[in-house]
Image (cartoon, rainbow, N blue to C red):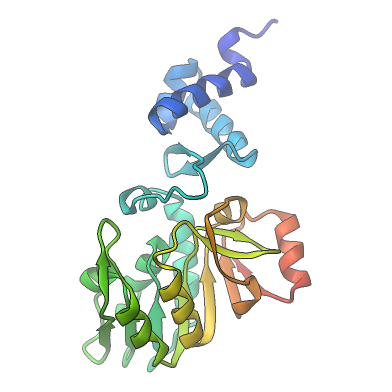
Length: 259
C-alpha cells in the first residue's frame, strides 16, 4: 500500500515548518488538520522535529526556534514545558527548609517554585521579579524582600546598578536561577545583555546555587554568557535530557537531579 502525500513524514514536517515560518506557533490540533492525520501522529511529528532542533515543543503544540538574540515574551514562556517546569519546581522546593533565606531569579520555573513556598515558615524570600512579588503567598512568619532597580518593561524584572549593588551585599542560603540556554561545555547563557549583571550578582550572593531548567534549554543557543555550568552546586532538569549532556555534566562532577 502506497503512502499518500499527506501521510509521508517528511512532507508533513515540511508543511508544519512552512506554517511555523509564517505564524511562529502551531497547536497539535492545527498540525493534525494541516496534514490530515490524527492528533497522535501530529504529536509524534512535533516531538521528532523538536528532537532535531527545528522547533520547541510547548504544552499542546510547538513554536519555532529563534535566533540567539531574540527573547521570548513572558506570556509565551508561560506556555512552554509547564508540566516539566512544575515538576522541577516541586523538586527544587525539597531543598528548602524552614528558616532559609532564598533568592528567586526571574523565570517561569522560579515563579512556579514561588507558589510552593506558603508551606514553609520563617523564610526570607528575595527577588527582583515583580511577577513573583505580586503572586507569591507566604506564611505569616516569612518575609518577602524585593530589590530596587529599574523595571524592564515587558518582563517585570528590576535591573540596573541599584539592583546589582543591593544583591552584592547579600549572602543567602540558596539561590535559584533560570537560563535561556545551557551548553554544558561552555556555560549558561541569556538572550539579552540587560539582565547579565543582576544574574551574576545573584549567583555571587548564594552559599548554595541551583540551576533550574527543562531539558529543551540544553539544545538552544542564546546571545551572551552568564557563567560556567560548574558555578552551580546542583542542576535540576527533567528526564528528557539527552545522554550525551548527562555524561558531560557527570564528567564535570555536577550534581544533576532529573525528574
